[in-house]
Length: 436
Image (tube, rainbow, N blue to C red; front, side, top):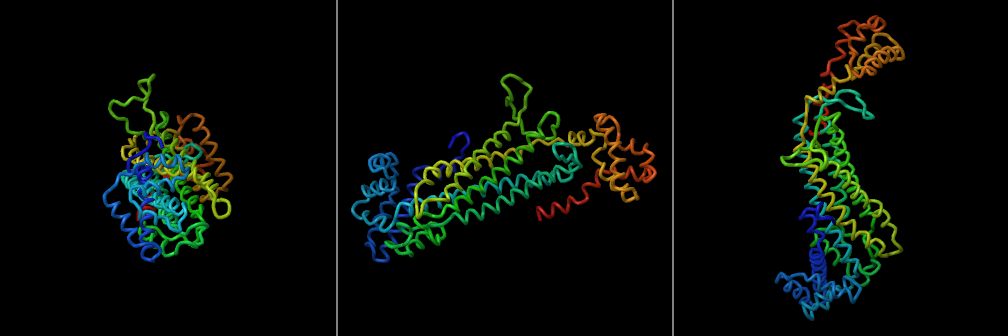
């Protein structure tokens, strides 16, 4: 985790103190249920919670010092709790194994992280929708292969992003539900030394569902899916970020990141206004996606359990969620403050002498009885003259001067095919599909 790209609420989920607090709650709830079953004295759970009610400071350094000797983090924690609670603490962890605590804790952390990410997505969606409605009919050029294609609106670009992030939200909601499972099943997952009702009880207290069959660990296909979804969200962030970066290029300059008073773009060139936020988002997306392959490789553990997944998850569990949280917040700010230049969009639309209307003329010629091959040839030979003149010539005027074209279409019919609004007649339909 790099503090520069971290926000407090998400970071807090992964702090050692928070981890140990979750560990305690799992252990104490399990002890409560074991007391109810008569496996341990009912006083054991009460002793734990009475101590917890004093709001004790989690002494991370003390636990680390014990672990330095035991070489086992859960044992170190249990030892530290026993030192503070006293004799009743010996009934903690009855019939449980370390993975019961570690995996259930990770499920809690990822569930809480997902809750924050879903809030982030809601804020981003709101920002995108606002800009989509603002520029619903703002004409701009659509590009394929980076080359002028046909007209669209800037609002449609935003609507497209809204639909994409709506899908991201749906995927994350499913992944959150899928990852939020509890395993308190003991060594190799057979419940030999702990009753399944303990698992049900702890799951309910921690806001999780029960893992149907856990071996000694919660199956890692769940985690693979979760981090794959985070990777897809990161890719969607990058897609929108790259769009902004392209639109900010000097030759295009149809939109750009907000440039605040006093901001500097370059240490050498005072004129520079660089898309640094969206470039940063492209980089952060790579960091989040980097977790997806290790998460999938973690699925194939040996038999009922090994710990090859453990060290990996200690890295990318915090890193991926913290980074994605920051990235979503940054993208929301970019969209909210994005500077949009409709006049430049119109100028770029007009730059190539009407080439963007070539398809309409092609279709009109075919409907007038010209073969598609001949129609394509007629329009292309005039379009290439405009292209080679860098837009200095007008496609409309060239077509009206082409005898083969005017033999099939009148000047009025040709002119009708250069109506910009024609391309936007279904904008309302698209918006209703996206926004309801």
